[in-house]
Length: 482
Image (tube, rainbow, N blue to C red):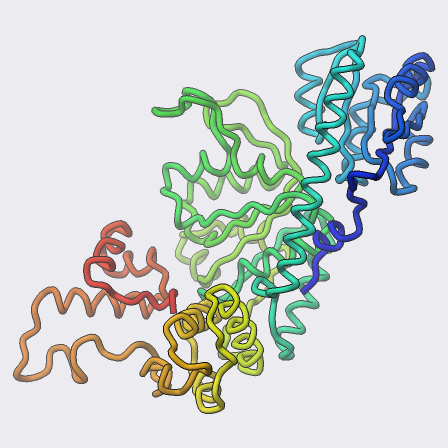
């Protein structure tokens, strides 16, 4: 699947070594415009000037401006340079902007940086210093575009993070994704089983959206301890708590002008749910231990494998937060509901791991393909992907055969075969050890919870850390890992 970020990377002009740079100077003082035009122009640099926003936009719309020098006060056109900066970065995010001012104030510099200013410098200008700064900005921008282009080409070559499939249910989902992505602000809630591909769909929403050139930041709410999740989301100031030796920006700040993906949102503790709701209403927050409000523009995509209606009824999830997150609710189907896509997924994964591992595997035999398509895949696409990786790595032939598949896949069972013998653990004539019982109970809980360790630990009445230690101790296969 192609995305907007890849398209922008492919179409954006990259400064090749022999290509001249085009610098746009926006200043209402004629003397500044003349001196910068004469001082910066050379065989490899072209300089054009503008008095205000209207003239500047004529040059920017031509599409060949590489860098903007912008005065903070444009008295002749009665414009605020900071407002114009925000407009330019919203409409032309790839173009670096250096702001010039004779009225340097700390709070203005902070605001300019928040709006996307590359650097904030004071007048009178040091021409040599300015030339070095411009060169650095142009090189950084060119490198960013090159990295994005290489990533786009790699995605096209391997197609490992594309939504693969042409089933009716997937076509409908992708059509909904494109429509939902058209908004900068509408929150999207993805619902679906573990391993169904919710994070991948979240990334597709970002790539298709107007903020695709901004960052995509993700956090698994179940993977961060409750006492640290607030700091992870909103950041903290130095000394806010023990070991906070330096200020740290939170994920909301890092995702500014981009997308923040809140995975496993149902695992968020109730007290933090209330704080998140307030932030989503205004996009303003304070760092932990901070005294100043910070403003951001972030697109929120969240995901859960739980029934949030049941969570709301039980009091574990706020109903008002649900309505704020589920402006656009989307269902990500399990793999068993899109069996027509399994052959295409298998082909994609085999090709990817063949290249990655370096084994010449042509594909999958007809008998093995039939078994893979008939299996119910409780771990969904993640389970299929992990299994194909193992088969490509461990297989001995040029083709994956039926005999290479695990027994529970060949026999179409609901999960891995019993851990102790072929009968019941507590069958007559056999007294299992406590370790065997504990191992079986943990494996059963993991299977029942779809590999969600937080839920499995809750069902077993033990801490998540204890569960992880037991999984390692007993060598229990995790359904979510295939």
